[in-house]
Length: 200
Image 1 (cartoon, rainbow, N blue to C red):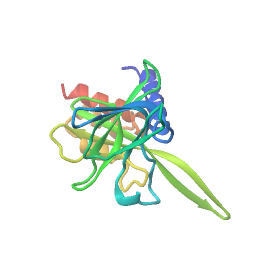
Image 2 (cartoon, rainbow, N blue to C red):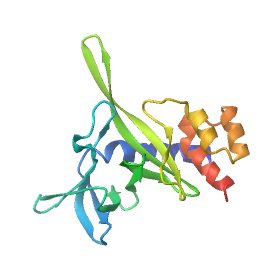
Image 3 (cartoon, rainbow, N blue to C red):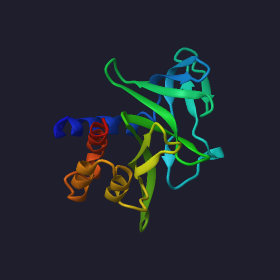
Image 4 (cartoon, rainbow, N blue to C red):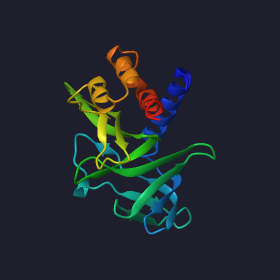
């Protein structure tokens, strides 16, 4: 995949991550019991400044005709599908971010490592003003891993470069590009896709 295509995909995915969470969007929720709830779908904004009410992210589906709403939680939901057009579809799912907690992420790219992304709400303060803005977070997970690994977070305790080198250490050519800053955090999709090519 060329750099231009990767950048296009990055902004395309960013659009899904940033907007599909906040407004009612055409879609469906595939449930673990085999049923599907169709209508307009909304998932909550994650705030890094506040704690979720009752601690869980829930998915809401609104019937287009009656306006009635249904609410589903992580124990019920298999996959969330947002349909922007026939060719623009985004998939979200609950992924484990700790032993006790699952949160909703967009499926960005799949392979030996699957990359997940989401938008989180943040606030910053200046004298007399409070500014609200969104930042994207990315987590990665292999099929045999019980918990996803954070690669890029809103409140980083470690740089993306160091996280990626540590997590993707078994691909030497990729590690070299990360160390030499040929690939950076803005190239996160390219980083994971190169790793998946390396892992084949």
